[in-house]
Amino acid sequence: MLKTIAVIEGDDAAPEAMRPTVELLQSLNLGLEFQHPQVGEAALAAEGSPFPDAARATIDAADATLFGSTSGLSGAALMYLRWGKQTYANVRPCQHLPGCASPLARPEGIDFVIVRENLEDLYVGCEGPLEDLAPLGLTGRTIRRPVHELGAGKYAIKAITRVGVERVTRFACELARQRRGQLTCATKHNMLRDTDGFFLEVAREVAADYPDVAFDAFIVDDFACRMIREPQRFDVVVMPNLYGDILSDAAGGLLGSLGLAPSACYGDDYAYFEPAHGTAPDIAGQHIINPTATLLSAALMLDYLELPEAGARLREAVRRVYAQGDALTPDQGGRATTEDLCGAVAAAL
Ligand code: ATP
Image (cartoon, rainbow, N blue to C red):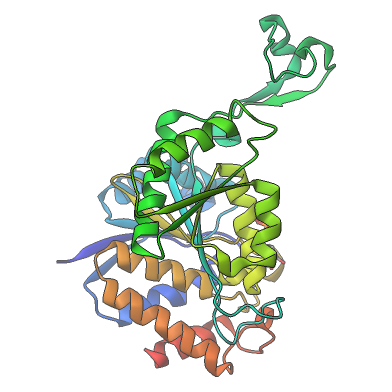
């Protein structure tokens, strides 16, 4: 059956990785149809809105969205894909590719997945002047100084809900079941008892429903250290939004480049796929952006579209290109262009 994919190429250098990735997918003849909704500055100029109704309708009608990194006005589409579509589980695999330029002496066998809660925590977008909180007279066991005594400044709300933790932890447990059966939770529960303490408590409750999944928990700073010292130890790691955002970029660094780290955001009835890195504005126009993260995100999309054999073949082709090592981009110490690397992957397929 024909599957439709909405493609948003993104900004700066992102389209340079997205275009050859889509061409490669098209060449596989998998029955995929690609639609290109107009968003961002182009849509503002043409239709008076950075995220017009037509773009939303294309995303809604598609089976999934493939999203290049965005900056600026295209961000409106991203907000819709995330909060509009309630894509609550951000999955960021961190797997060593033999042949990649990792800064670690022994990166072999690194294969873990960060499952980042994607909608809550400090990302609920509720910030403002501290003075606004003063009349509330907030007190409580974790307040170290009355808010009205803090002086002029700003606050941000960190919201952790039971529903939010339950659904992302269930997702992580199901994923652990398909992998090596181990789930780790990383929170700052020693300092943030009411929020991160609650995250850990609910995650532990949910994990208890999965007796075949081994559960452990670390304070997030301890986890950060262990992720670098003994990354091979971890399988699936669930954590609140902000820590997941930061640590998954750090995990990309462990592999050797942000350009290696794919990402997928799943809700109950929609998913979108994007590289974990940003738009790499400093290398835009040079055609040297590493497309691996985009290719591996596309492989996750193929799995989601019930084309797991095609997803596995694409991953295997990427692995072969790294093992051969003669078509790698400059971030990996090579001299290949983005198109060269994609061409090598196509040849390996
Ligand atoms: P954001 O805030 O959106 O994550 P950022 O500006 O913090 O974006 P990136 O755009 O990810 O970060 O870029 C950080 C650095 O990593 C830049 O020097 C960029 O060129 C490099 N980089 C990011 N992605 C890639 C890639 N796919 N290939 C090569 N270099 C990359």
